[in-house]
Structures are given as structure tokens and as C-alpha cells.
Image (cartoon, rainbow, N blue to C red; front, side):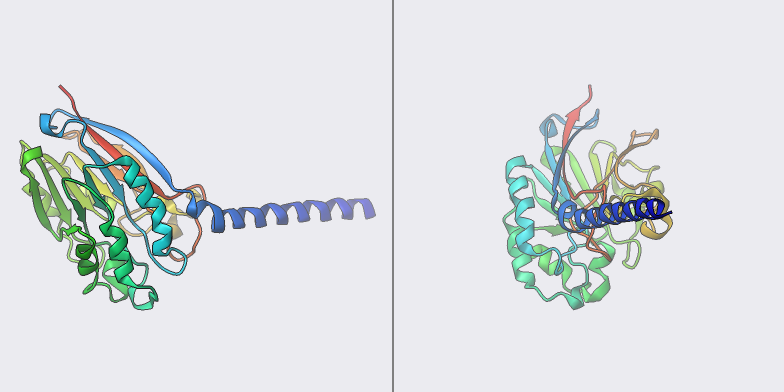
Length: 281
């Protein structure tokens, strides 16, 4: 009996140690393990001028006491190495603006260090409306050199590319029908913070949609989906999705940089994505 109790105690102790190690890993290690992901996207609509164009994507920084502008330096270093032609920010800059104790000018200053010859573009996420951010977010991003698209169309004519930004669909003024503005002869990129919006735009001339919002679950255990995944982020979670429609549309869901609700990541490290456009003859 004594031996059985000793073995049981050892098992419980081992489980406790493993659990504590996993918690420490999810809190202190993985949130800082920035991954750089490189993808090629092929399409016959990509013009000769846009061949091998590099698009960098990041989002969901959720600046707060757990993720400060100094932490963003790692993203800046990776972007400098990528040398993107275009940069997209997929929304959710500050976790809760009303409670943010940092200097937003410092955030703008970091964003201003990003270089992209064909422009830097951003959209609103739900956290860019909530917490008092609605009247401040656009100014912060514009001070960092980003063009904020709020249900707006922006043509990069020399590349034959259009960028269409859908406003936040949860608590903002998102209108997915603006995807109908995509020209048939342009490569049309939709920015929508919420990925499940893709189901509402597949009848339009959409070549690539870029989203964030889900954090790749943040705690990447599927049996928690009902509790972890947000509205409009329950179907398309992370990575590339392809659709058999008139344009063979693609959706890329970036898992973001920061965290929300809990300052942890598990099996879903932060990611900076680089997509290279390839002309498919």
C-alpha cells in the first residue's frame, strides 16, 4: 500500500511538473517565437509588372503591457530582411485603448520604420473600435505611414493590382459588398480582419483575401474552439484556403503577433507572412 501511494505521488508530481513547464512555455517562450512564413501565390491575372511582387502581412499586435513597442523590433528586423514591396496590417493594433498605458506615438514611430515602395495598407479590426480606439486608430496608423482602408478601394495601377479594405464586420461598419468593385482585369486583394467574410465575396472578382482575427486559435487545441474562436473566425482558422470559383480565390489567415484575454500562445506562434505573386501562364 505504501509503495502504491509513493508511485501515485510520483505520477501526480510528474503531471504537475509537466503542466507547469507547459504553462511557462506558453506564457514566456512561444509568444516571442516569431515565425517567418514564405508562400508563392500563382494566378494568370498577375501582370508582368507584379511578377515576383512580395507582400508582407502581419496583424493582431494587441499592444499592451505584455506586448510593447520594443517587442515589435523583432518584426521590424524580419521585415527589413524580407524587403517587401507592399505591407498589409490586418487589424487589432492595441488590445484595449482605454487601458493602454504606453505612448501611442512610439507605436507610430515603429510603424514608420517599415519600408515598402508600393505602400503600406491597414484595415480596422474589432479591437480598433472597442475600448475607445475608434477615434484614434486611424491617426496612429497614418502617422506610421499606413493608408487605412475603411470600405475603400485603392488601385496600384502600375502593377494592375487593387486593394479593397473591408471595415470591421463585428462592431464596425463592414460592408462585404464592396468586394464587387474588383475589376476583372486587375489582381484584386481584399483585406478583411474577419476571415469568415470570404463566404460573402466569392461571387466577385476576388483573387486573394487576407485576414487575421483568430490568432490561429492562440491556444491551438481544437476541442476549445467553441470558447476560443471569435465570431466570423470560426470556419477559417489559420493558413491558406483555396476555392473553386470563377477566380480560384484564395484566403490567407495570419495568426497574428500578440495575444488577447490571456498572454499565452500554445502551438500557434506569432507569424510574419511573406506572399510572392507569380504569373501563371
